[in-house]
Structure formats: C-alpha cells, structure tokens
Image (cartoon, rainbow over all chains, first blue to last red; front, top):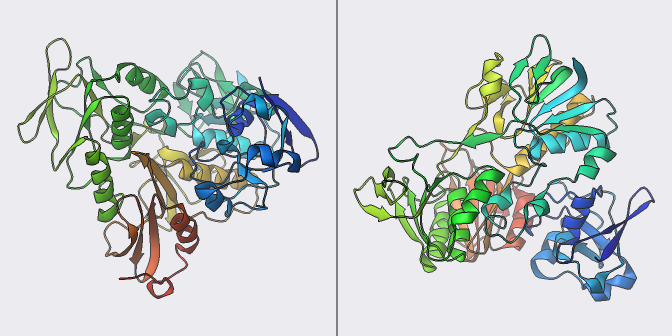
Length: 108
Length: 396
C-alpha cells in the first residue's frame, strides 16, 4: 500500500499508508491527520483540503489545473505546488509522497 | 452515574466539527458524542451520490477515523438514540443503559425524513434517503432497467435520480411545485437542471404530486395527482426533512421548526445549546430565519458555538454556501435571498452547463448561483453582501 508523509504546521510529521485509489484527502481523513478540513468531502467544491506538494514530488503528482486551480485561489498560502488533496489519487508510483499541511485552510 | 463535562447528542457534521474545534482550541474537559446510528460518523452528501452509486465504500466516507477520537480523547457512544434528557438535573440516559451527568449539553440531532402520508407508502419497494442505512438499502435495488419514481424534485430527489439514471434506471421525478428545487434556486437555474435531467431521459412531472402508491405485495407504481399511473419497481420519497426535535420537546425545550436558540446558539444558559439542522437560532432580537440545511451551516454553527463556550471572540460570519451535483454539473450557491421580497436577477454565461445568476435585493448582491462555473463562484462568493448592482459589470 502506498505511503504518504504529511508535514504538519507544528513541525512534526506523520506517515500513513493509504489505500491504492483513495485520494490523499481520504487517506488523511482516515488516518486522523489534522489540518485537512475537506468541508465538501472531496467534491471539488471548496478549497479546504489544500496541501503543498514538496518540490521533488510536484512533477510526478502534477500541478493543479482547471477548476482545482480556480478554487485554490481561495486557499491561504496558495502557491505553485499547491494541490487540493482530494484530487490526488494515491497509487504505487506516489509511494513516499510528501506534502505540507498549511497553517490554515480557507474559511468562507 | 458517569459524569461528562460536555455531552454532544448527535455525531453528524455539526457534532463532529464542534468536538474537533473545541480540542483544537484547547478545551481539555471530557467530551462524549452520542450517535444513534451504530456507525462511525460519516460524510452525508455522498449518500445521494458516490455512495449510492457504489463508487465508494462506507469506510471511505467516514468523517473521522477511530484514531482521531482516541488521539483527541473524544468519547463516542454509537449504541443508539439518547432516550432521556433532563435539562434541570443535567442528566441523560444513553441507549446502552448508561446514565450520564453533564455540565453542558449540545443538541446536534440533525433532521429526519419528512413523511408523506399517502396510501401505499408502507409497501415494500418504497424508500427514503436520509441515513447511511437508507442509502445502503436503496443502493441494493438501483440496478440496470429498474423503474424508479422519485417523489420530490428538490436537491436530494434530483441527486438520487441522477445517480439512479447513471446506474441504468429509468427515472420519473414528481414535483408538486412548478419548478425544480422550488424556493431554493432561481428560475434560470431550475430550468437549466430540468434540461440536464430531461436530456438524459429522466422524465420530469412538474406541478404534479403523488396521490398514492399502488401494488399488492410490493410497489407496482405511483398514481399522480393528475390521475396518471406511473409503473415503478422502486419509489423514493424525497419531500424534505424535518428537524429532529423529539428529545428537545420531551425535555421541555421550546421548538418551532427547530430547537429555538438565541444568537449564541443557547437554549438554556450555561446548560443546553443546539447546532446544525436541528437548530433555529435568532439572528437579531426577535428575528428568526428558517433553518439552513447544509453542511456549511452545520460547520459554521459548530465553530461559532465552540468559540462561545470557550469565551473566545466569535469567528467571522460566513456567507452561506450550498452546493449540489446533478448530471455531472455542479451547482454552487453563495448567499441567500429573502423569500418574500422582490429580487432582481442577472444571468451570465452559457446555459445550461456553464453560467451564473446574480440575485440582487434592495440593490445589494444577495446571492450568486454558479452552474458549472467555479470561476464565477469564487469571484461572486467574495462579493455577496458587499456589492450592489452597479458594482458588477454584467451584460443585460
């Protein structure tokens, strides 16, 4: 099962196994990772599951496009490597994926 | 008798968010959540979409894992409904036979199905859709070729209709008003979704209701208020939700289409509060709006109450947000219009799949509806309550 590492605002990190095919958000939610709010439950309708993908992973994961990119404009601390974690589907090629959880999520 | 500092009756979106935020903001008193569903708390919107479609499993829609509750020392009782609540004594009786004394209690009991009392609703083959159990039962029968009649053309009925159609059902929707999602969206948006549903073969009967469900051992069809007989294998009753106020009523709390609470979400000072679909707060002295049934509202109220309980300043008021997805087209609604006041509308874009409607009341932008148009939503959402007609350059 692929693993993902979450770098938390308090400086700690957590690594969790996530079922192949589940989104990074679903995996985070299932594993009790704090700071990923996912208010719309993964429907690409909010921006509260925002994560920042570490540089060495962004090419493999891909940058945000279209609707996702539009919604990310609402996310505090949004930048080039920002993704909505509900739009990243875990698979073996992403084993070891490392993302940073922002200090706060959009609140609107 | 066990003691808990904060008892939260209901473990849906409101209850879960309340517990989450309290812990995040440093509340370290004991918290116990009570759920009547015998399941880990789950995300409700997928019940009419991905879960109903069989695209995700139940565990995939869990709102929190057990590890979350353990890590944050949030106790969870999921055995069944809280049977008794004594506000004066500060005690409650849990379904598993335990009694608890609490310092404070929050009712987050949500809403339940509005029943349709027409002949035949008790026949096998008639379903409702509110809880996880309902969704699992309905999922079993939505198979290729099944004939489904949905009574109610609101958000829930339409989402279920869409999911069913994608699974191969042939679908008819009965709606007693003259438009879909009546009273909730503008006419252009209602018309757009009518087009989207009809384009894929779903039959819409507007200004038409169900007078009875007929059949012998099980459902065979629905008779409409016009007298037409609609053969059906499955009937879904989706005519709205009513707040779950039975426990509140029984314990002497004032209710009127929701548990009445003040602007701090308080029903009994220092003792009882209510949030989410079950609550009906004052917004100003003596002024109460209708309840807002949305995840966003449940979360807003949970955050507001958490701050209040901790003596912290209230969070900034959030502009109401509701969303729906039908036939693959997302609807995002920011703000709301006052029902019985005039409203001016401007429509921009390409109906029915990529457009938005700006709704003005008293010269102010009260609501933005974005259909398949996240750009319009993102921009419009920021302007609700902050812009007038003149501020928004819209072609007439």
